[in-house]
Length: 390
Image (cartoon, rainbow, N blue to C red):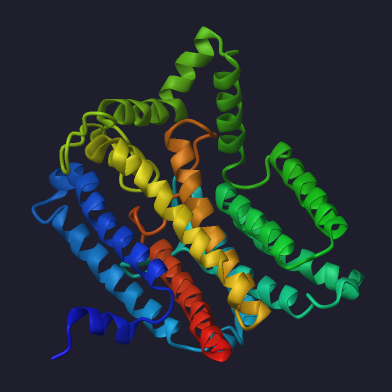
């Protein structure tokens, strides 16, 4: 009878470092979510056990998909990614017009008891689609003629704009990932500067013109953040801020301060009852409150390690597409994680980004594990490279 380790090796292929990090974060996430959702015990006799069961089912489905992709040839698996990207645009539009609204934004498509956030699909598809474009043009720096540049801008602009209408922070992550891919893809710096300037200018114009469902919230949070860090808040403004986004931030900082050196232990968080999104947007505060500063430092270290292992594929991948795709997908995952942690400590304006693999979330977790499956598939090139060199 095969051992558990042999079963894992049989189902998953690729970089063992990445696999172990993902398994650890995912299992830790289930424990942390169960604790953070302790306030839901008043919802009914099955809560929060029903949420725990749901999380385990989603995690199981995600790991199955990750294992299947890790064993496949990523060249074949990404063949129709452009069509999937355009399909995700359609789904985002449907969610915006007819989807389920929560928090003042329509981001979800509801199908019976299940909900689906198409922006997570678009983020994955765009990263792979751009990787394919840049991979075929690395050997020719003059390949970025006006028509190619237009196609790049269309993909980035179309995806970012549609996501921006209901989810500003995700559109920022998508845009930053695109810029990183352009750098790794050896796109001429003048072209990168041009694309960056155009989209930043358009983005600022959209915010100023109040375009999108969350435009007022975005402006308010940016203003509150700038006033707070510069100390220019009046007494009235401070009182208003304390009742809005700054209230959540203060609860997060209190949780971190009270648990940093003297952690309360798993299941003993007090601020989960005050934070409206304790299991997702402010899960980092709950982690530090319950597990202490050691966990607060370990978490970013693990994500940095994950990015290093994913980006390392550029140096040994047998094909340019593999290295670019692995670097882009890991950057997207890690940047989202750090965005959440920066919010929790007040380093940036409050926004609603979960920590991949750790925070509660259905669609986000599934597509994160699918991304990891692609990354693991790419990292199999390392073994092939060593075999070829021997």
